Image 1 (cartoon, one colour):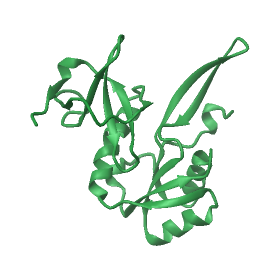
Image 2: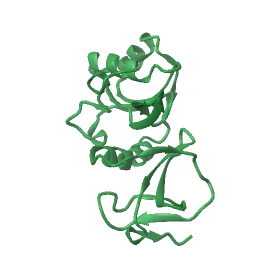
Image 3: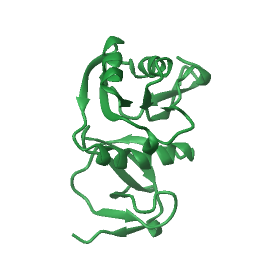
Length: 183
């Protein structure tokens, strides 16, 4: 298990937002448990990437263990040139690279996740939902973001889908910060 300081940054360059990355977006489908190692290699090659991660807390033999895990297991988003795509393939850490047909849509789906992570909000993996009420956030850092609102016995969560992967993430949200989207 890695110490916190041994984990790669969630995006590189760290000072930039993924909205400001220049080039073409691709999705690296990594070999099993290679997301962080690939991120370190992309940092060394100066290739922009986004690897959203979340903390998982577990107990083992009376000890509390904290692990920083990829939010979308097996995937890393990167942005660059065709040469950069070839460099990613040369790392031998990918099972394949997915082309992104709608570049703006992918960035728009990932941007709210980046904002939440930078604010230190706990974002967790979530089963992608196709049914449910679509809502728009009306207040806070995610104003204008659309997602699906679900309720659990303890909280209300906004599910943020990444359609291309067929996966989603969720974050706790107050009901007074969302409005129903009329169909």
